[in-house]
Image (cartoon, rainbow, N blue to C red):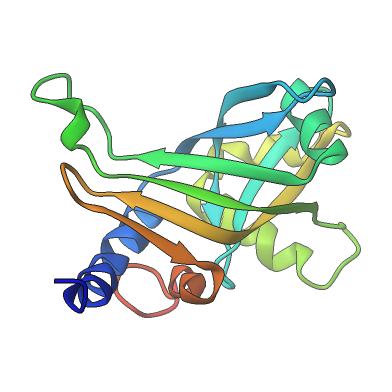
Length: 170
């Protein structure tokens, strides 16, 4: 049975990739200055390298938290349609390191374009001085696909996020 586990885990990686690429609203988990957990809902997009992009106000508590402690988690779930057992919904927790994307850096234009391709209504916010673009580099993921379907993925296997659900660049 243990010999089948890596194959089952590999077979579920496309489900993780599809979930990340088809949703755009997630729970961001940070730690406040006292080390207490803090969660908030944020919009996100995926950049061409598989990083998770957040466009956040630097006035928000979660932004101050992640700037002080750059280790975060992002929880993404299938949408709940309001009936059936919500525990059967696929969900993934992505852990990672976050950094602010410098507007003068070479990757800023690409990341901004990727974010706006997924969230075009955010365009006006890019002119606000308190907003900044951040990128989470995933270091681990835990996919729960339903009952008895939980799989962990190390950073080395998360490069598939860059390819998108069809396996090609998204």
